[in-house]
Length: 192
Image (cartoon, rainbow, N blue to C red; front, side, top):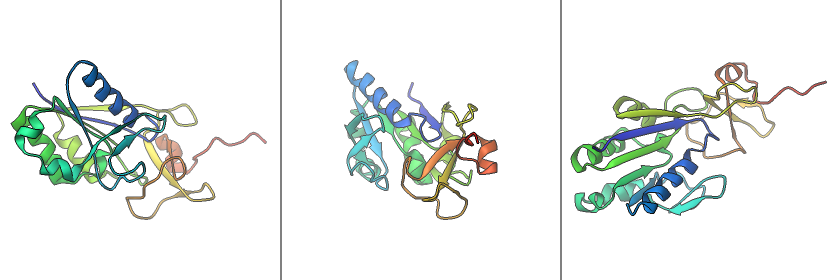
């Protein structure tokens, strides 16, 4: 029975690497996985899903998924969506339809919250509608679970205002625990 999975984690928790490994596992078993990402994710090029550790595979963009008919989608055993936090409510609804109407498993990977600890639209609806919600863990510099993403400026100071969408990686964001996010402590204090 097909299900909608939402696997969320903070930055650096290996979400994309895991998505690519799942696609590889499907392929290894003779099954087909369709890799999808939102068009807004242009960091690695238009039709490439790439992890920071160097894994990459070709993918389609979400608006291309929206154009596929039922027969085309049913040709796949699984649809794997990366950066699912950027999906709209309507796009998450499409993912539920793929599961419910076409009987194709969907595994969506993404952030739960933004740098202000507020839900992304896609994450909100995935949390509400997914059959299975799983956290992918990573750690803060202090060793606690890093559940928050912090945006920082060129001086390494935490940013608390601005637009929700700003593409970046280790050059703009760091994952920290809630305590250190609240305190704005993004880095381990240096011993004097």
